[in-house]
Length: 181
Image (cartoon, rainbow, N blue to C red; front, side, top):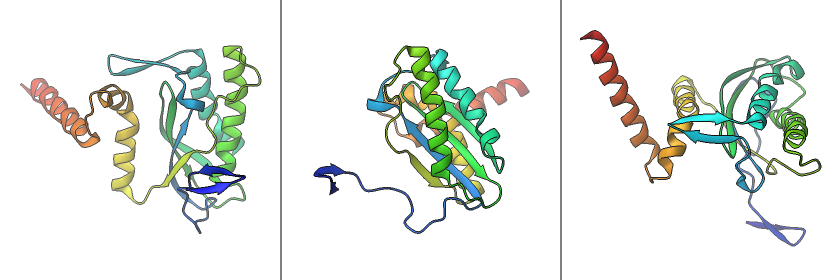
């Protein structure tokens, strides 16, 4: 940790000399301010979105209208955060950070309008990103995103992600065996 304006801050997790406007797949996680549950709740291992959660998902899906050189992979809105994949199809002057800033600004205005909290800050400052390196990593990131409601629910029981994936695979194998029997 370092000091900035006499306050402690966590160092950035962004790659130091990486060009975040270059082609590639990026995994992002964006958290709500103070990890407030403002998008809905998890019930029976699936996410139930409230109007703010629905609006947030719609803003995410419209991001390629603002940035023509991107496509979106899988995403999930959770009670207090969201995960998604952005693919930059060709190098651009706009960076991943610009894209997330636009998303947070537009969705934040709508979230505040829906919740009657004009002027408040629904999103935490910053976001987590990871450059996805290859097909295998893309697969695991996608699995994590799609299974996040399950992970979120089981996470309260202290299970690790690999235990959750093993359980999911066992359930799928049982289901496949029942279908072929």
